[in-house]
Length: 330
Image (cartoon, rainbow, N blue to C red; front, top):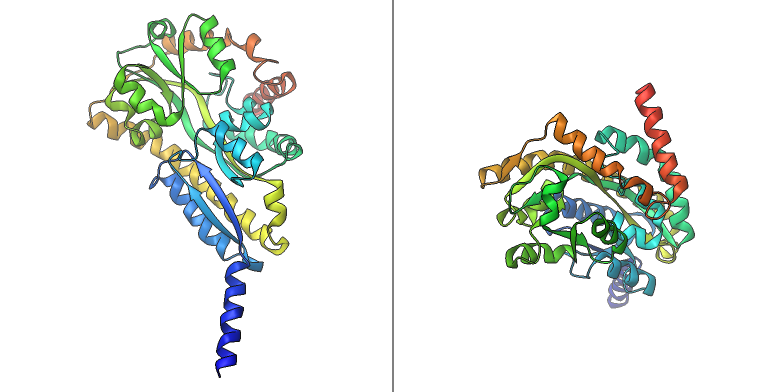
């Protein structure tokens, strides 16, 4: 009887240790819908065939900025990350085509159309750099929040604008256009607004609410600057270590997490604006004239973006796909 109990204990221990340990980092705040989607994915991964994977999630940017997360994945300290285009571009610049072309996308349906058709190419290029894409997602439109009311591009020239730390190309473009970029990690936005280091920031409303940015930047311009696009990736080395029989189920649950994040984040953008208005946010409404002014401003950057920020072939492909979509509206 004692021997039988010991064997059951050993077998149970083997089943527990069979799960592949994986560590994933994200800047998403704990308790948000993004974080909850990852937690649901983690639970399903634990139940995957062959032992699945035991996923540890580091939220709130505790593993550092996105460049730090990519570096740690390359060094083996982390195996996966939920990253925006800022971090993904550290791996391969091709992903920048989904975000670094401001005012080009006119609807989230266009974003979906282009992403779905570029995904095979982007995933192939990321795989060549040693990363497997688990799912694509976005957090809706990026909008401008500022301490003082602002409506036109020129209004922001007097402000100190947040830019992502490590994104030197964006900072250089802004400087060339007469703006004052201040590179910071996303976790430094709130204290930066609080102490005056910055007084304007471009973020999706959901992030502005979650990070309480509206408290020190209580004015929002209702212009859809660009989508905040991202993906969750895992190193190929770590993915290859996952039991082969578990991968299909894990990819399926990852895809479900991506769909959940896209759907919920987009809905939360509108909900967040409503919530922040009740807390004192003032919305500067857009008009056709304001929209035209911003579009003209953004298009002035395209010659510098094409080939320098976004690979020329992918820049041209995005333009072609949008023309195709707008012509046929499939």
